Amino acid sequence: MLSNRNRARLRRFGRRFFPSARNCRCGKGDCISLALLSTGKEAIITCNEDLRTIERGLTSGTRVTAFRNDLGEPNLVVAVGDARYVLDRRIARRIMVRVS
Image 1 (cartoon, rainbow, N blue to C red):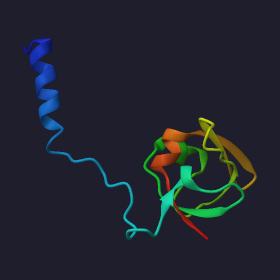
Image 2 (image 1 turned 90 degrees about the horizontal axis):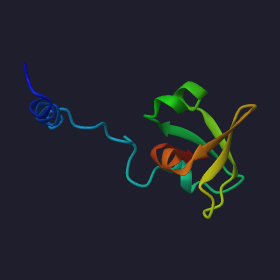
Image 3 (image 1 turned 120 degrees about the horizontal axis):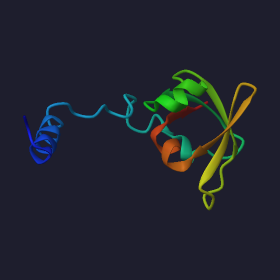
């Protein structure tokens, strides 16, 4: 039986063998983060690894529109079809889009 201290050491050991997934497979400069999308612009999602936003309908190939994206605010409002979502800026930085 392993003690809690040794169990934590082994847990960190295995993380080196499984690298994290790359955020975007697009060419350099082809896509930007959703947090950088200007207000009123439309874009197509190219890469999204966040499960919570995928369940809401923000999947690859979906067209989104930025309704409110002020850099001073912690959240931004995006539209997907008829739905409107308020996203945290940290989550929006991980979603990559291509401006259309």
